[in-house]
Length: 441
Image 1 (cartoon, rainbow, N blue to C red):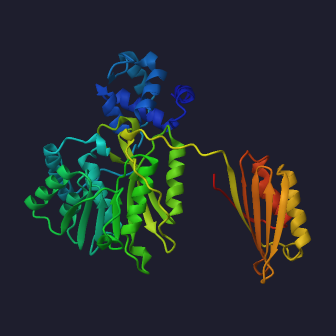
Image 2: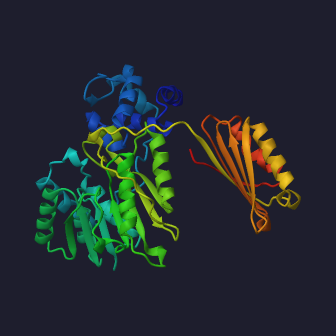
Image 3: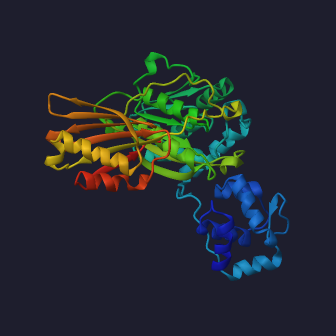
């Protein structure tokens, strides 16, 4: 089995070895599983599953069939190797009797509202995921006496919270779909749920001022585009109450990019960081859907904790946020952008203009950064700023002699030579091992 998995790994770089073994376990132990059922069970995107099926074509009854089934003799071969099952989601289906009742209630409600509107990127979560979304908010202690806002609610989270724990102060739902609002209002009335309100709202428009800075908890599942997540996080931060007790403020964000787009995952993290939100938890494949095979019928849950530095950014005019709008991201010219914080610089260097200038010049030579012009500015507190115009952009340095610290901002429009040696060279030149580096682009 080990050699088989190693061989399959070569053809399936997007899958871990344990995931490959888990897939073989499913195929060896389950009968008549379809492509869509396998995607829903594992959270593996459609394109990744297709590649996997191709890699095991010699073991399958039919490669192009909608049903994924092993040849009879191959199934026995896999079983004899005792493949191990894989835990496709770390969030267990361990529900109490009351929670099982809520799941059945959500399933009944969903059966009455089954039409997903692609114009709004609606993909409905299964009933267990809907309850799990409510549970994780409750488990974090974010329901009792809390003001909760939901930006979008096609997964019926407002109903799940109301059925699970009605100790909240208020739940306000901001939803663009008029039909969905009407339906949810009727269900709230029928189930006698209290203090749940629905407002027609398009996230591309500003919130009415009476909702700004009002809520302790925000939950949202934005459109799966870069501009969708950027806009919805911005709106979520707008709704958060302003106070000094940041420990009680959270944003629960569902989002995914799929295995084939890890660079989008990095962009998500970058957007979260720009708002100075702390990722307290990230649970992969937390929410399961139907009809979203391209992302594996699954999305991750980001539990974002508000910090004292969480604040709004300048938001551009965003008008296209849905996937159907086919709005490709504009390609920005190539840049290499690094920021360095250097502490513990030796006094004979940090207090000497000539030593600083000499060492910065050597750093530029080591990394083939051609200086075409420079300027030095001295401040009253003895701090210095060095501005170097490079043939391919610029380098700016500022020093704080009293703190033995300096800050370097380097940006170029061509790849930096030997960039993996920059921290080592700075540490040597300024005789300190306290060098922090951050890659911006």
